Amino acid sequence: MTKIYKSRVDLFFYATALAIVLSLFIPIPFIYRDILPLTVLLVSGLFTVAILTDLYLHTDYRISDNKLYIRSGFLIQMKIPVEKITEIIHRGTWLSSPALSLKRIGLRYGRTNVVYISPDDMDGFIADLLSLNPGITVK
Image (tube, rainbow, N blue to C red; front, top):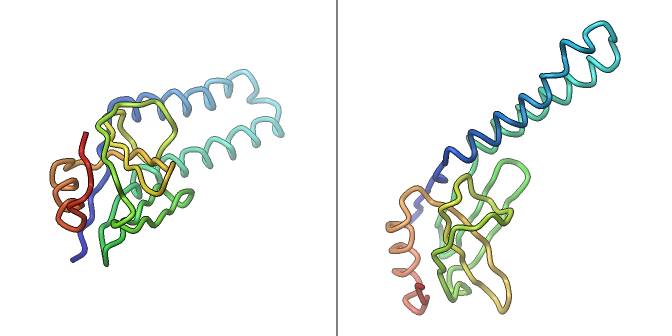
């Protein structure tokens, strides 16, 4: 069974992405005569837009072969065996994580590891994890 859950996307992600892009492009009218700073600004701005687009398009969670694969753009790729997940915590957090929403669940695995994710269909995602590992505690 392979099931893919896209990340939930909040207004928070859109607002943050817009603020980052605007902060890169607002200085353009002030430096348009200086080629080097303008080129650096445009290249870094386009690179930032490419990374944000990649995060938007490729943040998902896949359950396959009793493993949870977490992907967030090309930067984060994780593989967690479902049998190592011990607890699911419902928590909104500002901590950096492979999630595009502040409505997140924390997956505790191993002794001290926690990763926060935000699947669009949270109930279905939790049900699928519980079907593979009924020993998971949901808080």
